[in-house]
Length: 132
Image 1: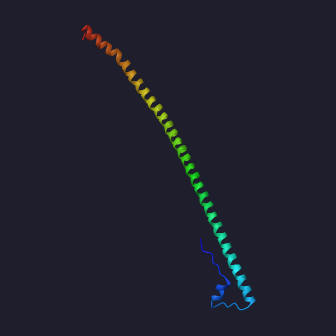
Image 2: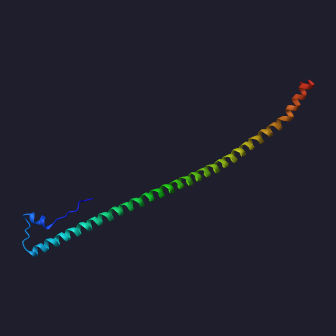
């Protein structure tokens, strides 16, 4: 904190520039001292108010940072959930497509097996009966 300047009439008399010789000058010096003290007091008050204002601003800024961080965490979770749900849906669609392809392939193999079954049974019977 800045030091408070305190001057007395004795200090003014010591200065070679100022010579207090009569009552009128003496009164002016007292008034000047009062004005200086009032200025110092006003400056001190303004400094205290500024410090308090800075502390309030810093506190508000810290609260805003905390709020923004929390919102970012919430947004991150929300986005992660959306992305996860999107890929789950895509996975389900892909699984359905794979199952359709697999079912089609099974049907083809089944048809081929059924078509070859009669011929295979005939060949097996011919071998058993010794016809061939």
